[in-house]
Amino acid sequence: MLILSFITTLTLLISCVVMILASILAKKTVMDREKNSPYECGFDPKGSARLPFSLRFFVIAVIFLIFDVEITLILPVAYILELSNVYSWSGVGLFFILILLLGLYYEWSQGALEWS
Image (cartoon, rainbow, N blue to C red):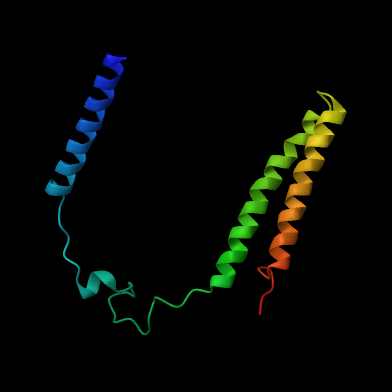
């Protein structure tokens, strides 16, 4: 137990020393107008490249990603049904789809899917 705590302390100490040295020795960059502006073939930019971002679009995109990943988790269930107990896997699959539908209903009731 003593050896494990010694190794843990030594590892934390070495990693902290490396991070401190990296921050001290890192190349400092100077922020100027040309580096912060968008690149438009050497010309001055016509307008602001930092346009306001629609938060509603971001919420819809995150909801889509969540449901898309969960759908990819459902796809192997059809293949596994042939190899194992049909009742247990169909119960698990139906429970998973029920959770998805409840999440979709919650998002719909909160108004996150309305684009207005």
